[in-house]
Amino acid sequence: MGRGITITSGKGGVGKTTTTANLGTALALQGGRVAVVEGRARLRQALIKDKRLPELCLLPAAQTRDKDAGSREQMIDLTAQLRREFDFVLIDSPAGIENGFRNAIAGADEVIIVTTPEVSAVRDADRIIGLVEAAEKGPPNLVVNRIKPRLVNRGEMLSVEDVLELLAITLIGIVPDDESIVTSTNRGEAAVYDHQSQAGRAFLDVARRLRGEDVPFPVLQEQQGVLERFFGIFGRRRS
Amino acid sequence: MGFFENLFGGRRDRSASVAKQRLMMVLVDDRYKLTPETLEQMKVEIAEVLSRYLPPVDAEQIEVKILRGEATDYLKADIPLKRGQPDMG
Image (cartoon, rainbow over all chains, first blue to last red; front, side):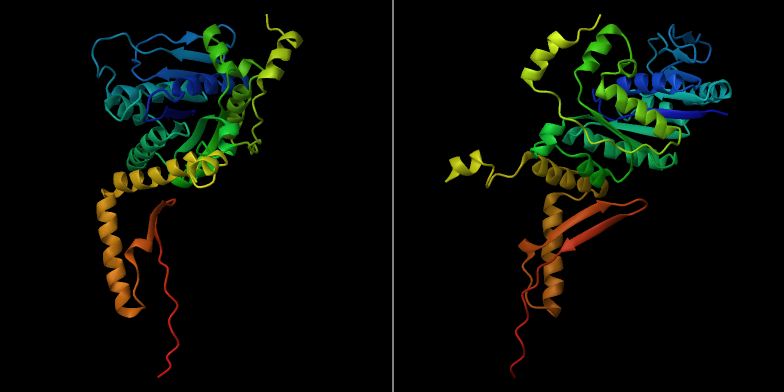
């Protein structure tokens, strides 16, 4: 029986969908059978296989005008069904704390919360933690996304330690702010395929921790400066 | 004064610590419906009670934080006490 894991954030725009996509791909690359479900998926919908990775299947959001489409019971049934065939069922929750979110956690055994080191994102994460605890889904795991080490060192950005002290949940990933995410999103590929991508490596680590491996959190490297990047252009070129 | 101190990050608090302080206030309010005003009132009353047993406590110097724990939250208060004068009587 597989694990149903909902990925949620409270606030939109913190990288929840990017996290879901990369985590799904990473788990599949590591040999797991993975189904990724978007918040409003329906029971009788076809799974789409990822072309590069047969272990990875996607169930996109149902195209429907009904806002509450996919009731709580349907979501529970759907997740239960998929858990029989897959090792991991990742459910991408819609932002907010409304029905969509409640449906998305209904079928889950575990919850991952994505936040960024910003006041409004941490505040919304705290609200979501309260709701997840009330729903008795067990203690959620936290991914801190878009960390900028240089700003943290200057004291101009909340550190991971600050966020953990405020939210007091278990850390499962630290993902640096990384320009390669923009590139990989443009290409429609997960960053975990890009071995140069720091964010991609961070997501691979999240997947390994999720599978129970004890992976230390690496000290984040500074992004290279303008000059290095300039000279770097001559050094390597991606096809 | 301002210019050089600002230039070298002297007096002005780093924005991350400001953000953390703001968040602590906001989260306490979210979780306990405790506004900054109520928190101040609480400090005044804590000072009143303690002053009955200890040297006078200044409410403005009390720092109250609510920290999130695994199962419960904790209220942590830092209350500076003026050193008692030894009794000369």
